[in-house]
Image (cartoon, rainbow, N blue to C red; front, side):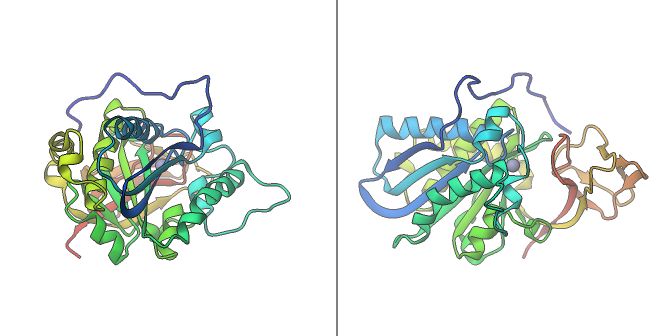
Length: 311
Ligand SMILES: [Zn+2]
């Protein structure tokens, strides 16, 4: 259970649309490209706010930076509305082509994102992709990886839980697409959608990743120790690898309602009551930890069950 609930909530400025290009920083030294995508889900503003903070600090301190950093917003139309998506989930359509005659809102967003990303996919330098998200339930921050040696290596030693194997339940995510194309790509979930702490966790994650990729030395990272401690402290004993073992998929929502009060990563027993739908109560088929319980209107994943792994 949570120790405290935050009462403040974050939001993006309501009068201006979030720009596609959140900012760019070109280091003076040779190194990899870093692309940070924030707000691929429009109700997840914390990554956008964190990247704006980081870009402002980079401009101010202009550290010795190896390579370049580019940050773009994901679903601009949905960010403007503060909703997960307008027509269809932008993070479930990367495995198929759009209907060019009548593109959905998210198909136009995908086309615009590809225009930014594709030139980097043929770059002669390595390119790392990062996708910044948040969750509807209260949660500690965590990393999600499509399993590949490169994705595992770059996140080794990060002081947050790492979740593997979600890709087997989710078709068409941007990061599944990028991993299949051979790119190192990491998803970070910074906490609850509107919690101010989610912005802080995103910020800390980004700085630590810039150290991992070799873009910055720790002495060039402002408040480096604070960032490392912040993530280490909030993760507590959960700095482990987990694999997903079960997904409760929603079909037309079918009256799904999660039992209130579940916190991400909370331990559950086999047979425990988790949710209801129009057919009745839904009990846990496995013992493990509840993962990403759905407490919002949009989305197709009711909940997952994950288990610790040493793989
Ligand atoms: Zn998301």
